[in-house]
Structures are given as C-alpha cells and as structure tokens.
Length: 196
Length: 196
View 1 (cartoon, chains in turn purple, blue):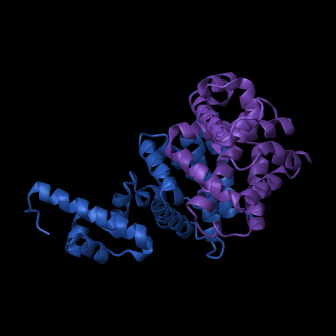
View 2: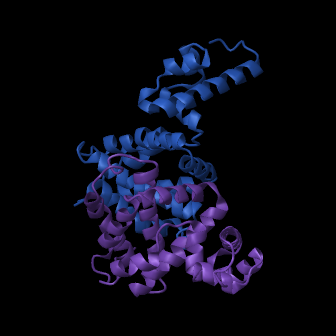
View 3: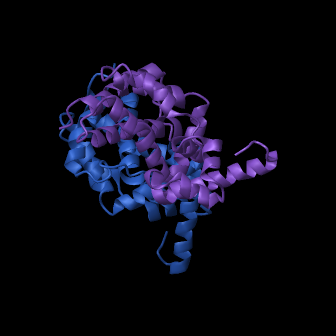
C-alpha cells in the first residue's frame, strides 16, 4: 500500500492488475467481476487495487482505456431533466467524438467489433456507465427503460459508425448543430416519446 | 471467353479477378474503379470479367462477398412511395439480418471497422448500392438527399451494431415488429420529415 516500492515495480504491478481486470471483465462481465477476484488474479491485495485505481467503475474505465469518465460528464447533461435531453445528449456525444478523444474512442469501437470479448466489454461499458445513469437520472419507467436506452445506444452508436468510422458524407463533415437538430429529436423520442 | 479452360484454371482466374477487383475498389472507390483496370490487374480480357461476374455492380458485390443483391430487394420496398417507407425499410433490414445471411453481414461489418480500406468499401456499398437507389426511387430533393440518406445509414447501421454485434438487450432479442414500431418513424422522418 505504501508508495515505497521502486517505480518500475509499481508500473509492473499496475499492468498486472489491468491485465487481470481485462480478463475478469471479459470473462464475467462488469457485474460478475469483483475487485477481490481481480486482485487474486494479479497476485496482490485488494486494497492495492483500490489504492491504484479507485472504485470498480474507475478500474473498468482504466482497463478499457476509456479516455472519459461518464460519471463526471453525464450529471450536467442529465440534471435539467427530460425536456431537451435528446439534443443535450447528442451535443455532448459530438463534443467528445469531435475532440482528440474521439480518435481513441474510434479505436475502441473498432476493436469492439472485431473481437467478441471486447464487444462484451463495450456492452458493459455502455450499460453500466451510461445507460443505467440515464435511466436513473431521468427516472424512466423500469419496464420501458432498457428498450428506450438500447434504442438510444443504436442511434448514437450508428452516428459514431457513420460519422467517424465508415465516414459517409455529408454526415461525416456536417456541423455539430446540424447533427444535433437532426438526431436530437430521435434520442428525445426514444427516451420520452411513444415507441409504438 | 469460351468455357473450354480446365476447371481449376477457371477457378484461379475467377479468384484473380476478384483479388484485382478488391484492390481496385479499395484504392479507387466504386466510382473510380473500372472493369478495364480490374481486367488489366488480373491479366485477362475485360470481356472475361463481364462473362464471369456480369456488371460492375455484380462484381462489386462479389468482391465484397455481400450475400444479398440490393438491386433485387429494394424496388419492392421502395415502389409504394414515401408513405410508410420508414417501417418498410426497417422491416426489410431486420428480415435480412435476422436470417442466416445476417451472420455474413455481421462479419463484413466487423471487418469494415477494423480495416480502413474495408470501411471505404462498406461506404461505397451503402452509397452506391442502397442510398442512391433510395434517393432516386423516392425522388428526394438532391440538395437534402445526401444528409437524409446518411442519417438513415446512421440509424440502421447503429441498429445492426447494437442488435447483432454488441448485443445490448432488450434490443438484441426484441421481436422484429417491436423494432419496426420504434425505429420505423425515425427512418421515416430522416427521409421525408423536417430535419431542423
């Protein structure tokens, strides 16, 4: 626990913990994996995992090399409530993907599509770090929430696909506000409108 | 041209043509590649390329190993015109992806996301084989059509991503008609509704 180890040794330990975390999240999913199991896999004390990486959420983001923290970004967008949430979510999404962080995000998404285990981690990332938070903050009906938020994932995931990876014009180069105006109402309806 | 060559030789020639076609489509795009260049690349006469593979569209689908022919599937869906086109397109899309053909489609999409050249071919496939046909059949305003159809690609591409590859529930297992009811209106608005 103490910060007395030599630097290279600490770096190795961090990498071993991350490797054990990736394996655990890939095999058991986010909900099934535990800090205790990950610590055992890395041959360290669970307290050291917390010391290096914080909460299970933090470790999950570090293992996936996700360059953003939804726990910090989402509350501001969700706080004003359901009115206009579609446009605010799409605007935040574009702000992240249009920034240098988007390059990393594109690499993660590409990887997710070529490896099954990684697809599972992306699914868990979206579900536990984003969709559940949206459900809770907007107080969505628990019966409808999973379909509503998975529909939001389909539209925003497809936007990432077409704008940043497959790059179909003019969507690939359209100004953010053009995209917000076009896609915001879709996300709004998926979250708060009629689906039948 | 004559079918007198030995079988193995013919098979090799077909493969050489397909390899030359993939290279040409990847480097020059669908519009930039020509049957003549592809024939030169494969060391055969252009007439032989037509003999084996038919039109440039047919050769493109063969090179990408696309298991469907949009030229045959789309007209029936597009013929009734703009009313209800959103639901009809989503229903056709799910019919293909929910069938055994969907497994191949998922493999193509996965590959498209891990290789840049393949992403270009997927972009060209969507643009030339599907989106242009939708634009023409629905007589969309040429100024708006590219944005409208690329938005349709974002929603349907994202649906493929979430339902068949990342597999987020309940969208991954929802009955087709539930998805048609939820996503059909989105595609309808992207094609015929206000975008601002």
